[in-house]
Length: 273
Ligand SMILES: Cc1ncc(C[n+]2csc(CCOP(=O)(O)OP(=O)(O)O)c2C)c(N)n1
Image (cartoon, rainbow, N blue to C red; front, side, top):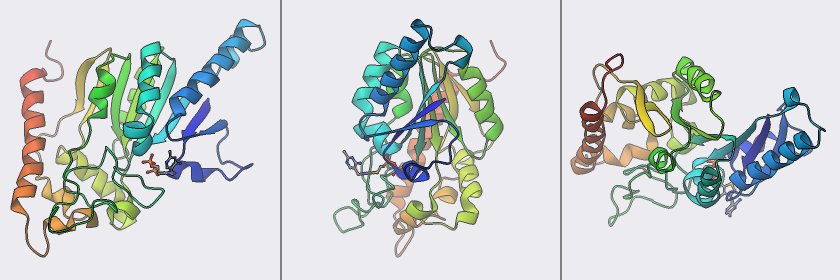
């Protein structure tokens, strides 16, 4: 495959001319990875049409981008690429802020989280007062063949989704929760535990949409309170100390509850036709 990487933490993998990847790697602006993917796809297609690239040597094109690029700066070019039906894979690692430049708020930053541009103050005691954009739904509205959320704690779910995605030509999104010790403020040894809590509290739903049709791939039997996920993270500490912000915590819990109530009302449990 060819990886098209928007500026962000992942670009630090490569220090020109070296890269740990075995595939080709194109570095783009934050706004441009989907346009870069179009250019690579076109080049491959032209080479194939001219007989310079054998069918079996064709390559996949994968965008690798953070949430700042995916939810904000690159959204316009991505929307256009989905509209054109570009055959590409898109992996967004969502750490819910612009990590590489010091953790500024992005459209993915959740309500109640502290970022360097949404500090805690008297006027904004909850830090980020905006709600996280629903990029899964923004993609799904254009009905690309495959859209999925994934999480590092459920690797089999991830592998199965990649396998299912292979059946489709066209735009395919994999939206990954990227637990971030530096930006979120937690001990890296807790990374898997936090990913697990994101799933068990229902904060990060695992789901897929095939041609617009949504199905959840994991529904907790018993949901843990969101506080269990929020409390270990420094970016949410102000909701608990020095004084508990009950209103903000209830708001976060209510949003999660509303989401799952809607799922229960609209989605048949697995196996029910
Ligand atoms: C137009 C533009 N503005 C600002 C920057 C500086 N910049 C480089 S990486 C980055 C953060 C990217 O955030 P995100 O996409 O969330 O990825 P992460 O850093 O979290 O991996 C920024 C702001 C840039 N490269 N281009």
